Length: 602
Image 1 (cartoon, one colour):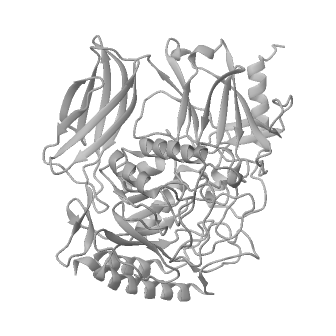
Image 2 (cartoon, one colour; image 1 turned 120 degrees about the horizontal axis):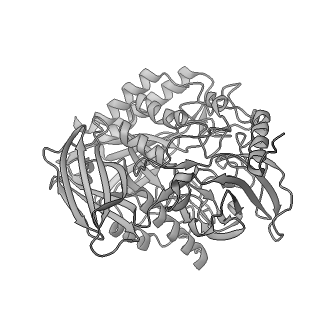
Image 3 (tube, rainbow, N blue to C red; image 1 turned 90 degrees about the horizontal axis):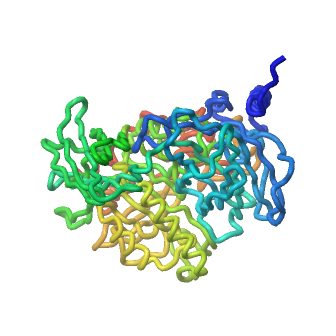
């Protein structure tokens, strides 16, 4: 009998484990949880704004171990975990807490395809929370700190013949450390949720030539009918060039060449503007050429759109989209899942919330203290919805008497804490810069870890002048950035007004409706106000929206309703946490939302 190789034997064990895998725990789940196949987890290309034809997905069943933080790697790993679902999640198959006293070890084998020979191999991580040390064949190849931005390592020098061993060691102190963490806490309750430790976005391999494209930054200028393209490269030298081809559907409308390290400005004839009503995207192919040979090629896209603000005829500072007054209205979107926590079970699930937001008549999403996988932003680009992107909060939380007026001053953070915040915020902004749906950066929320606001906002404005900056959504207010952002629960209220900047209602609503069989917890459910029927909730939503429409006429330029879905103990979503029930009358909500958006045109 022919003996199996070690690699084949391990593959067989993995298949056997897959047959036995099932979600952990007894919490509610979305319908997409049943579609998760541990042999084919999130198979879609993870970075569609910069796509190459060749790649390898490393999602699936890995071995894992939880060990004390000061001990060496354990000899024996505990069991299997489904990557990229956090260890605390149901879909990981584990649902265990790690804590700051422990580290989480991952291990798996993989093979490099034979036709990648002679190319550099990059190992990509979509996101790992929080500190990740990566080992290839027992060689530490790198360390990354930050739970929300992607990173990669060139692992070419450390590869061996045959199968390769990949290990990842993760430490995450959750709310007992100074790092950005969003809504995660050690002891979840109320508006604070379950920790997310470890790998929570796709892990993948990519072959590249030594001379390759590292990133593409696009900046539209609709007033000049042009797009500025900055193709950043690695390994290039004097004489290498970048070729950019731009298409409108099947028609090539521009083809330009530029030396590496130079920006390219391309005029777009008869430009088609992007908006939620018409989310037109131009396709773009970018090639790197050295001595007449194409060494790298990526497919991308961009949009022609402009976000700005301007005083209207009544003297109110209004947001504008493509030089037209445009009221931005959308839900607070936490991006949490009962089965996957930070990670949607499938790509269909990921796009569902966006589509449903559009069905409700909204034109904007505030992505609340979380960063999504790259595919989410591409879905927003293609479907047509504006995005306010929050920075995940961290460090200490404020003490306030109510949500209108905060006590005390800005937080004094340690030098380490400040450095961590600034590094990760820049990484997030760099990562998301070219997505046209993102129209606003929000560095702080409600004073949570808010520090050096003036300096940070001024840096934000200088670093990305193409977008709006919301200095502190509902937080300690400073005369910087593009808006004054008020929070008020449950109903809308304009208790402050800024005559020099736009005034926005960054959060309101929170109308609760607990529904049996769709609750994360049966005995601890919370909303700012609660009702017992869908009609009662719908009526209250309509009442608030009609009030908001009048306030839009008199001064508000944007508003955010809390929230898209229930999340853990919060029951104030438009949908249940499992996405199985729309809790309000959808047609009525859509009608009144469009009334709010159009109110400033009256």
